[in-house]
Length: 150
Image 1 (cartoon, rainbow, N blue to C red):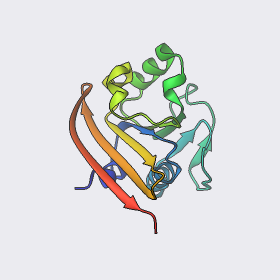
Image 2 (cartoon, one colour; image 1 turned 90 degrees about the horizontal axis):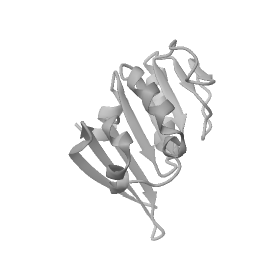
Image 3 (cartoon, helix red, strand yellow; image 1 turned 135 degrees about the vertical axis):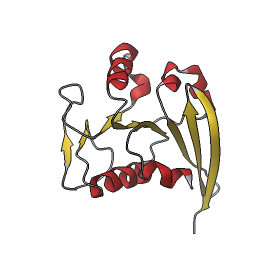
Image 4 (cartoon, helix red, strand yellow; image 1 turned 120 degrees about the horizontal axis):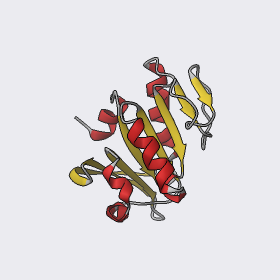
């Protein structure tokens, strides 16, 4: 199965989406909401108005099935990592505006994430998406997708 599609069907897991990939963030949240999941987003970096989507702090309460957190790599690690450990049974989309790909191995967060999606729009008219599946901080599967602009 296509790893990008696999992520839309997850029941639980932590996904790090990098490169300010608004289109992918919107697709994942929308698919989770369509499945009837309640989603809490700190903020929305893209436009999305769906029933079941709430805006607020993820650190207050555990009433939701899925969460969207913004720019996790620039946050205090102790609080974020502790929260991620406590919520491993939920769907968590970590939306990072910076582009991070192979350098994820330098971050401790690699131990906590299940998927890394690195989105990059190239200047020569195409988009590249690298998807990594991780287990215990190690890359176990990777796939690249390229789309040319029309």
